[in-house]
Length: 228
Image 1: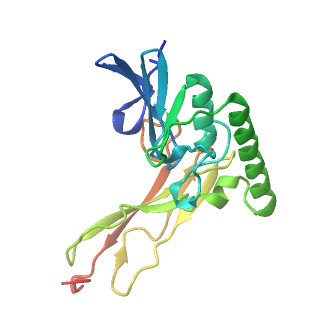
Image 2 (image 1 turned 135 degrees about the vertical axis):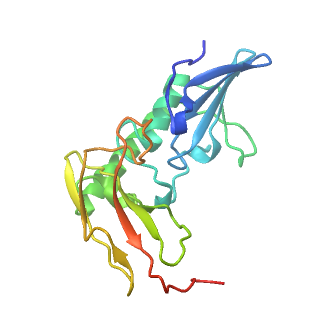
């Protein structure tokens, strides 16, 4: 048996999509355990199931050590999503390319890690002012896109300010640019409404895409290049 269920994934690709390679059945998964855009691969053949997990798991448990990687807390998200998938796949071996040997996790070990993640979420909410733990741990819940761009003097550029709403309630946000001398903005401010519990990206393939406010800026005609 293999997991051939399909669902939309990043940039139109499919998560849980299966194909054959020689005598093996391979199934690709969205697997947000090391980073938000991480992936996993299940290989089935010769009566065994091997899950290639990248850095999302280790014999000692879960590798989760960087807030910037956006490993979300909550049921069905981040590492808990990965644990749920391991429960369903029940791999005989899990492979992390940085480990000398493959390993496996018992149902009891998976349940223990799941409870620790629940406790982590509870404690973070208790010690921070946010309505959801992910506001405290996700340093990119407000961000700009693109990260950088080139523009000529006298031209216009657009910047999207993207919002991930981790909360259970719809919320409003206002973006007002603070500009260097000589720069102008077509909009003094932009107001948007962010739906609740968005997915963390504006990718339309995701179930609840993030929203964004677009600001258009005018570069001064006499602006000198930042570097030559």
